[in-house]
Length: 191
Ligand code: FES
Ligand code: FES
Image (cartoon, rainbow, N blue to C red; front, side, top):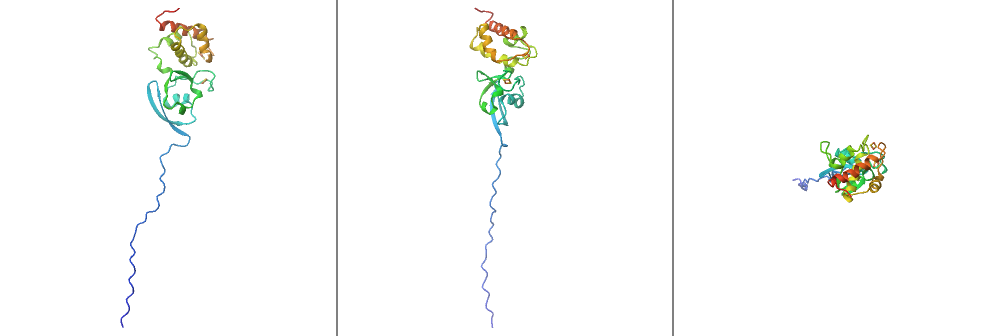
């Protein structure tokens, strides 16, 4: 007697199943960091920095321009003054991320040791600095003063620079330097 044939096993197609893809980790900046792009003294810089980093620290540490000084770090002494656009600003009171896309000028842009600008030269000639710690801030504010008011009176100079502290000079030399620089910038004409 013939044996009944076993029914053929249904062929199972081998299908390759892909394991569900794990979400690939995206390239992310570490928490609390952000990219900052700004121009300082005509040069563009792009850096990743902590969102809580001050503009002053960013300029000094991330860009490497250490002419901007830090004294009080809470907006009182004026040593950290830079120009944001065309206005003097205390860079210790701003976060670097707040300056995204800004045009910044620091004391390094004024002149070089070999070629001081008239304001710097006047500071030197009038002994307007001793330790020099406050000087970058005074120079930046005085730069704006002389641009906005090319012939300031002594009272106007004193008032404009009154937000800056100097522990060394007694201010007399600083005021004299600003007035003399105004004169020099106008080719010696006053009045
Ligand atoms: Fe910014 Fe003193 S360091 S005001
Ligand atoms: Fe020393 Fe001003 S020159 S603090």
